[in-house]
Image (tube, rainbow, N blue to C red):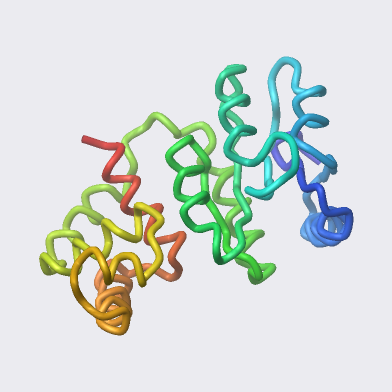
Length: 204
């Protein structure tokens, strides 16, 4: 097993750690389990191989602070953040802090494994021009002004009701615009949509 296939699972829930450990081991990843970000950071000396998957909400050092401390320590290891449906704003913040991806729970096993493989494959290309950025910009241009406003709200981590209030429209209308945005952007999930928006936002 190559070091590059190593996945560090950081979660305070022992059942989550065990189930993820089992899932990833059956997918031929080498797995290391940690009960907290503090426990992981205590072992984070020198070069870190593989990738990290962590919950955004944890006691002590949460997922956001965990990311900041990794980056402050000079570690470029890709981090995938798991988030509950109500924590999308935190997940968006995590991506702006440098997370490779976020996945909403409950998630499909194959989606998680795919996200891990993608993070491992792209970990050495973080500073390269993103190959999709031109295509994403073209899709953004196809959005109406109102659809772009809804997208901006989603990327800010706002719930539909807040976006509706801010724009003076009904939550149902926001849902319709959101569905149109997802379709026009070719996004398979909210995290995919946010990731595309952040790609072009970070590439002037």
